[in-house]
Length: 219
Image 1 (cartoon, rainbow, N blue to C red):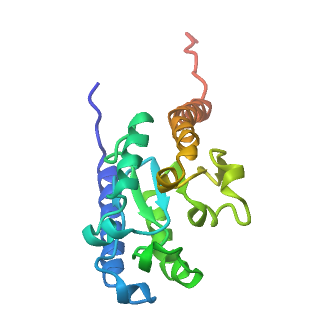
Image 2 (tube, rainbow, N blue to C red):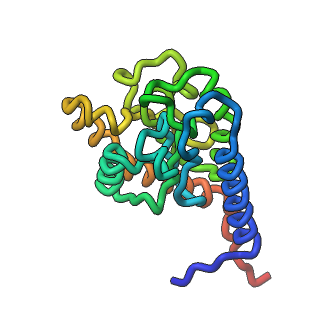
């Protein structure tokens, strides 16, 4: 079966690409917080503009700051492995961070730094409109799960309007604490099931919205 794309769909995709490019350009020149003084490259995020799954980490590290792309170091390699086990690839998802510039020494992002980057992240979420947001790490999950502990809620999805938010450990956690590797792999292994359930629910809703078949009569 050959899929066709309408003009409206093409226009919609072009608008998403343009919006993401505008966000990226603003991020690369952003002077809003102290991280702008120490960065080598800002890291806006990258991936599929039509992604069903969006992953949000905490902040760029050394390799990300050097290359200007998210998750390219050891944590990024592990993320790629996790996605592959979930039947996904980096080309199918969109990956970004709560803060777009590397905190010095890979320290935790500060509240004012996260606040400065928040509008960029909100615009990315609005443009892509993913079905699932996977938060990677406690700073990423805090927007949707304030006051919660990641050790308690990791892997448990929460509905936020029409999308699901799935909190998970940051892949880097497994590099520092080997005992967490199994939990991270198990959480990612649930993604295909979650996507399949969303697809089934969408199809059921579409079917339910169709008008009943009209029987033809001879009179």
